[in-house]
Figure 1 (spheres, rainbow, N blue to C red):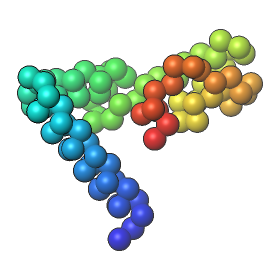
Figure 2: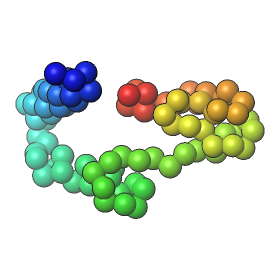
Figure 3: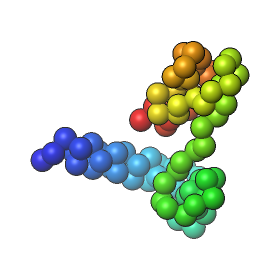
Figure 4: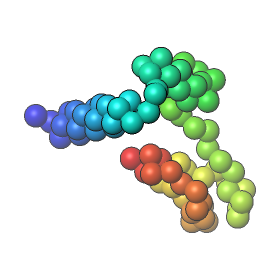
Length: 88
């Protein structure tokens, strides 16, 4: 199997396991999950089943901070509040 396919399947299994645990430990429903997915999807004002956050302005040099790399590509500034999900 292709490494990318294996990676995607493992991420899908991880998400399914996390959701099963969350559902068992809370009163959240499939509807709650669906609403949150739509809310996150709409942050960029486009329904495309992706969570695309707009780039942030670098407080050091004013350029855009590349969320994919978690730092400014011009001056190297690295935001402290980067989510673990932004590094995947």
